[in-house]
Amino acid sequence: MTDGIPVGVQRTGLALEPERGWEHGEHHGGVEDPRISWIESLGVHVMTYVAFGPTGPRPALAVSSDLRTWRRLGPILFDYVDELDSDLNLFPNKDAVFFPGVVPGPHGQPSYALLHRPMWEMSFVRGDPTPPIPAGLPDDRAGIWISYIPADAAQADVRALTRPGAHRWLAGPEFSWEELKIGAGPAPIRIEEGWLLIHHGVTGKIEGDSFQPQQAVRYCAGAMILDAEDPSKVVARTSSPLLAPETSNETDGTVANVVFPTAVENIGGQDFVFYGMADSRIGVARLDRLP
Image (cartoon, rainbow, N blue to C red; front, side):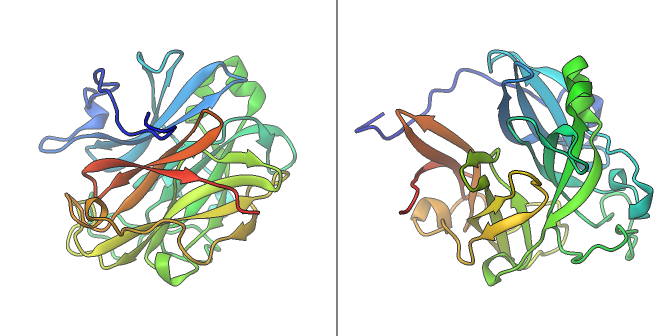
């Protein structure tokens, strides 16, 4: 810390490696894009991450009591919902993150809620030009979904978190800075107006294999507020990005023009957003509430 601002990190080892058969393929693999939620009512830190396995990117879970030793709970398997006329498990999925506490479910049932982003493409496993996207989907661009786990089930067995159901489309691209796709960032923060969700938005063009690093895209960060009594409803949303790639560390790197927020930490009474800079460095930005 320098003048109350985080300026560096100390690496103490690896949390997870792609060691399980479902976390890697013959020529690829990864445990990627981790998001961590401290869920006090369960007494554990819950890490959602992308397992880049034989059939592409899939969300998975691990839990820890000390942030050093992690126990895998396995890949997330989404309950089948007949009204969707599709199976979310058919598709790659990223940007999964849990709310840090119990929220009202679709019928008011106390629940744990998971945000995630299904991707309506099957090119990793087959070249199907018309994937069976869910019925009634208002926008076929990749957007944010919310799913639920009954609180009593997860409190009886934390492994219940890997079986979310009652899926709802929450939000898709709406403004020009996010016209390609959007995805959730850090765990939502409870504020007086509801739940503050920082998300990323992407513009540009996907070239070739969408599962490979892209060089013709631009990632920015914005925010939305979700209703406290029904977190599947968006109360407010930024029409312009809160953070965009501007510095050289954000515009030049492994994937240029990327700011990718994944964590918010309160340090000394001040909230800081930690984010990826061009897939090469870790950046930090102060999160202030405007009057």
